[in-house]
Length: 344
Length: 267
Image 1 (cartoon, helix red, strand yellow):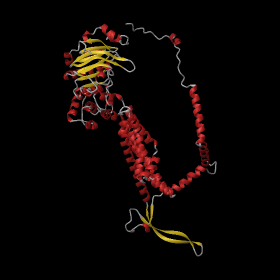
Image 2 (cartoon, one colour):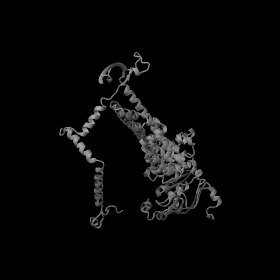
Image 3 (cartoon, rainbow over the protein chains, first blue to last red):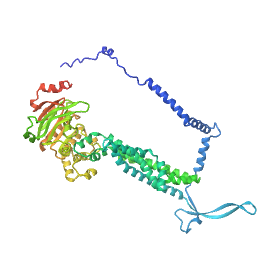
Image 4 (tube, rainbow over the protein chains, first blue to last red):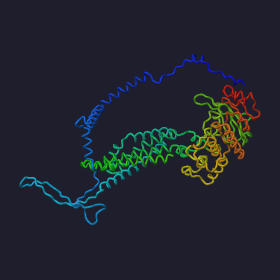
């Protein structure tokens, strides 16, 4: 046993080592960085970044009292004045309600009598004359809010069914589009191609065409969102199947299990948490997109928004925007909690 | 093709496993197995010993079809292994893996019952809802490998390496296989746990008369646990016999140049 004096590394040896330790930064990286910066500057001109900076500076100057007013400030103020106060009530001319009975009003509703002024030209004198007529109007204080919330619920329902459609479509697409589970190359290419195509068509565009095919209403919205979502989920699901730990799959394959059985017992438990996360993200996204997709007549709150906007009823538009904001905020909270619970 | 002398018709019937001039050459040119021929009688605990890269894993993986052979024949209980008969052989041959190869997000009971993946009805696999007899058998096995009821619903991530390999062994025994292939079953465990796990594997196999083909790289463990040692080097058999017949010079030749020779001969 000669353990008492292990040879110490001598300092002499250091001089023999002539290694090259690469520097963390190279000239090539610097040149690349300058080139990218140059390209970004050119691009900034093209997207009017300079105009954005100038107008923003003007707005800040106006806020600080250095300037009288600013274009941005005026624009925002006008929007604020138009949208607020938001319209919560719903007013109906009593004469237009069939079988109106003042004793049987809806909940919270009351009847108001208003003077209705009308200016008419007197054909004899060719002068404008004011005529005042008294009208009875039924006011439902929360009528419009109720209607908007109802539309929002319809929107969420569209989103939920779109998500269900997306999941149902993407499960077979993911199986056929996962390189290690697909039956053959041709089917793999078709599945991946389909998924890319579905993802490539923006919802708003496909909704436009689906409205022509299925008519105005939620069907077009649910289909447009579901197909687009299937494009996303099909890709994500397939990539997770491919990336799943191979060792447990090997173990079950060695026992003579078929592909589907290995997928069920070994792959699915591994990928389930991320599947839930993707699906919740798509649901979240579908709710937000479902509000937009109504703009082309595909149902939901967007259709109401478009109608009110076109009629310049900005108070009602304000109500809709507030309801959308509250919904998206709540949905964020709910899906974060759901995710934490399901993924544990 | 004439059969080698050691492989008479009588021998083929007696042997549980029979390897006949088995060779495997990988696509990149490496020859992992080079004309390996041996028989394993029913109920034997046979250790394949050798340094890494000697072809142990390839030999085991060839037996259940995970690695297809380049040439040669393998027979299980007299039936030759062919692509057509592979499924039926796989159901009689279970495997214990080096990295345990359990599903991390399933619990102990589900991992053990997944040993019936190829045997249970399809809807039962889909719902992970196995028949009562199988559930009872899984519980018996989990108790046999030294875990208790509290472990049933634990996930793999919560278990130690030794406990995970116990689950792996329980899974392998679930369908009462004729043969268990153990590919370096204790390579990722500490020495004390390694002995416990190998003891469990050997005793459980003896109780049931299960043939075990177990690859190891630790000489001391091979000497203590094997009924018979087959030593391999560069894809060929360099020793085949009882542990007490293995002498120092043979051991030195197995590990020569592998960097392990000093410590192993000393052990």
